[in-house]
Image (cartoon, rainbow, N blue to C red; front, side, top):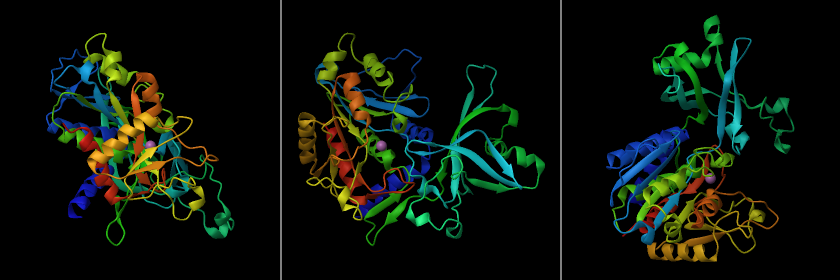
Amino acid sequence: MQKTRENAQKLLDYLYESPTPFHATDNAAKQLATAGFKELHENDAWDIIPGGKYFLRKNSSCFAAFIMGTADIAARGIRAIAAHTDSPFFAIKPNPQMTKNGHIKLNTSPYGGVIMHTWFDRPLAIAGRVLLKTDNFLAPAEKLVNINKPLMVIPSLAIHLNREVNQGFKINAQSDTLPFAAMVNDELEKDDYLINLLVAELGCAPEDILDFDLCLYEYQKGQFVGQNDEFISSSRLDDLWMVHAGLAAMLSAAPSAYTKLLYCPDNEEIGSLTPHGAQSRFIKTLIERIVPRGTFGQTMANSFFISADLGHAANPNYPEKDDPTNTTLLGGGAVLKYSANQKYATNGYTGSIFTALCQKAGVPVQKYITRSDIVGGGTIGAIMGASLGVNVVDMGMGVLGMHSIRELGATIDNDYVLKVFGTFFDN
Ligand code: CO
């Protein structure tokens, strides 16, 4: 149990230190560099050697890491784990400041499928990236910021002013969810609340700030829950849990005959259609650059991809939402995700490979499929399968409250996923 708890604490630390996809990528890059992975850049020529360890970033919010196989890559193929770096949040809009009666609010926009009511009445902080002016207009300087202070709150309306609140509360994403940030008297502060914060954080001049990608995040760190710490409660389990597990497997893997790849794109929560999302050419181009010319198809035919994204565990308060014959439980092991309409990439063939892998790892497998009268979500699994022509399985670990500001997982499931990924990347 002690080791299990230590493993999960590492996950909780990574989740807290990664409030945005930029930070998730930066923290992964630091760990990879420390472990001897060499950073590649898209705009350079690459010199890849068998057994070499490399990583690559895109937009600072997507990354891939790989260990080249020591044998013919086309014949031995690639074993890949893929998980997305983004989670639903509130993004700060351009010119966000709204001031009335000396009270400052920030204008925001939901990103992805936020469960908005879970964001009310919680101290919130700000993180993201800021772009600063340089001598070259084509190359602004990028700075990550994490203003790790409880800066603002989205306040609920008192029940006395909305007696119907417990009968169902319709939330207007423009007017009901704006964070209350400050009370000011000073005329200067009034105009530049956010810019003043950034200037203080970065030590730059206000006029150097060209633009930003910033969002709100929950200030409170994730924690264990339960008499025996059997649960983990945190923001961004979807999908940084799987990013963290994939990274752990990559960091402890050794070179062997086949090539190992970890691919962590951004923007899954909004459909993946960005240069750093799974619908882009990024991963295809990367693979084309590391295999001998003309062997892409052969390489893909010999490869196997795991699309790792969280699954829904059975919520004890809503048994009617479970499929009649397939129930997945917190703490029940890896969740194989099925969809008759192939919204998940799993089919009998790829499901059988994953099942055999879990058996080898000594990890239980559960099968998830949505009720036929419920429309489920999708993942990057189907996108990768179609665009690369590769065999993909969709799996994850079970979670409650997916897309809530705090999702709930089982501590033991973290050990299970580490075992499965470790075995997948094992010699
Ligand atoms: Co997800």
